[in-house]
Length: 354
Ligand SMILES: C[S@@+](CC[C@H](N)C(=O)[O-])C[C@H]1O[C@@H](n2cnc3c(N)ncnc32)[C@H](O)[C@@H]1O
Image (cartoon, rainbow, N blue to C red; front, side):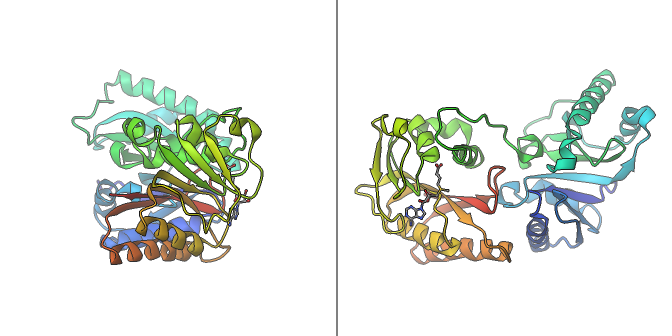
C-alpha cells in the first residue's frame, strides 16, 4: 500500500490548525511520525511523510470516533493532475492493487470554493461508478471490514485517489449529516442537538435511549433543543431567564425554570441533561462533573464554547478535567466530543454514565 502518501483530514474551514494538532498527537501516540501541510481556511489538512504502510495501519486501527476536529478522513495518493479528456480512465488505471471497494464517494473541501465542485463531483462520481460496474471492479465487502473508494477533489483536474474504511470513517460524505430544518422548531440551533445524537447515539438505540423520560435543558431559550427533546416524548425542565417559544410551552411537556443554569439542581434524576449556555468552557466542564458525580443525569450533551486562541489546548484541558475528576470518584463513563457541522466556535460533547 505504498502508493498512499497522505492522510487527508477534512475539518471546518478555519480549524485546520486544530485538526493538524489533533492528528499529529493521535498518530505520534501510535508511533507514526510525519508532518502536516495546511493553509488557513482551506477546510482540510494533509498529513505526510510517514514511513511504509504506517498511514494504512493508522486509518484502519485508530478509532475515527475519537477525533474531534476531523470530520472525515481519506488515505490518499499524491495529487493527480488529470487530463480533462479521460479523467475516468486515468483514475481507473490507478486502482490496481487497491483493496476491494463497494462504493465510490468523490469528496471536496467544505469551503466556498470547494462547494462549487459539488456538481462536478456528483457527475464524475456517477461516471466512475458506471465504469467500475462495467469492469466488475466494485465488490461488496466480506464481513464488516470493507473499504470505500474515496476521491478528494480540489478542482476538476487536481484529485487525490484514496480509500477509507467504511466502519472507521464518517458515515456521511464530507462528515456532514444532511439534516432538514424542522419548520416548527423555535431556533436553528435545534439542528445541533439532532446532529449530536446522530454522532453519539447509534440509530438502533434511539428507541431505548432517546424516547420518553425526563430531561433538563440548560440555557434553553427560545427552545430549539427543548423542541427536539419534546419530539422524542420527553418531559423537559427548560432552564433560562429568557423567553421560551409559546407554541412549545403549549405542548404541556415543558416546565420553564427561570434560574441560573449553573446552579440548577433537578428534583429527580433525569435521563438527559443538555446544555447550550455560552460561558467559559472550563466552567461548563466543572458543572458537568458535578452532575455526573451527584448522579443527576444518565447522559449529557453539552457545548464547550472555544476561546479565540489555543482552542485545541483548551479542548484538551476541559476534557481532561472531566476525566480526571470522574476517575477520582471511581465512576465509569464514556466521553466523546466532536466539532459538528452545525458548531461554529465550539465543540459538542457527550457524556454517558455506565
Ligand atoms: C445559544 S442560546 C441557547 C439556544 C437554545 N439551545 C435553542 O436551541 O434555542 C444560549 C442561552 O443560554 C442562556 N444562558 C446563558 N447563561 C445562562 C445561565 N447562567 N443560566 C441560564 N441560562 C443561561 C441565554 O439566556 C441563552 O438563551
